Length: 240
Image (cartoon, rainbow, N blue to C red; front, side):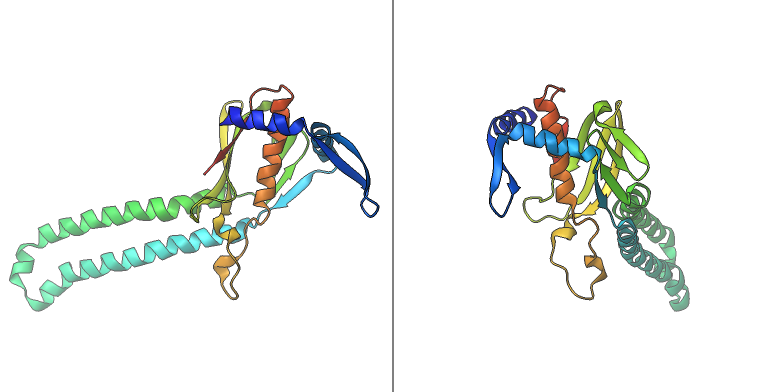
């Protein structure tokens, strides 16, 4: 797929585009698409593009999700424990008391399953959001900066990034993984709910990263140009 994208992009670069100098009079000049792309990317050196991520809102969202998973599970375990430990003693149910250890072992097994589900579905996404969601992303002509961490394009082995629109309407988490000097670093950039229409008085509809698609296509273009100019194969890998 990377090879096909590289061929398609080379064909695009071989075309020409009309660059307007005066939009009202439609006065401009025709130049190769490749030259236009290069000028646009070079301009990032003096006028970089900065993207803002509502990291605190996303962390709160993942924390609420963790609570939504953990609280019902804790309540279920407490009710089961109450039924096994307290009710038989109060009702003098000899049969339940005789099978106390068997019932307790089932509850402990269920507690273990609930704990694993809570960690996988709640705690892990929350921790990733808390530790790896940047507030600002700045793209220059030769590097990308996440808060204070800078990655030079010439040192990047690969970039993997979730595509903006996932087929089938699934809501998936958006991430970008940058491998620099063979060391991967993953950043969490919200999820696909940003594409859904906002509903009034619904906190979960707060936009996390509205310009995610602009960042995706900007990086895709930058690395396609670099590949077309002979700086190795395309290192940008879209993920679904």
